[in-house]
Image 1 (cartoon, helix red, strand yellow):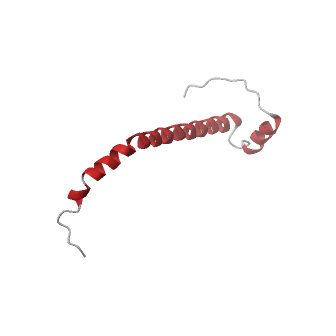
Image 2: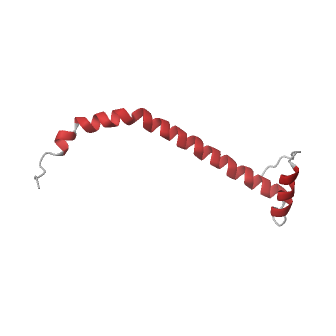
Image 3: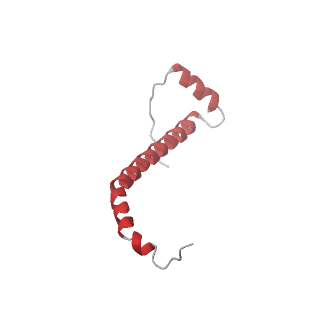
Length: 80
């Protein structure tokens, strides 16, 4: 895997937490995994938003189709 060296600045409390939690795995690995997980979360949120917007835009069309075929859906069913 290609790597890039970065120089970053963190708030002191985050640097202390990094020291505490990344001891065994190494700081670079811990930071890389954290960034990867955060990016995946952001992408999931973006896709969820797009799906929601798509469903909202097609909602009226779905209701219209359902209403159009409502009478034929019930054809042949016995009354109880």
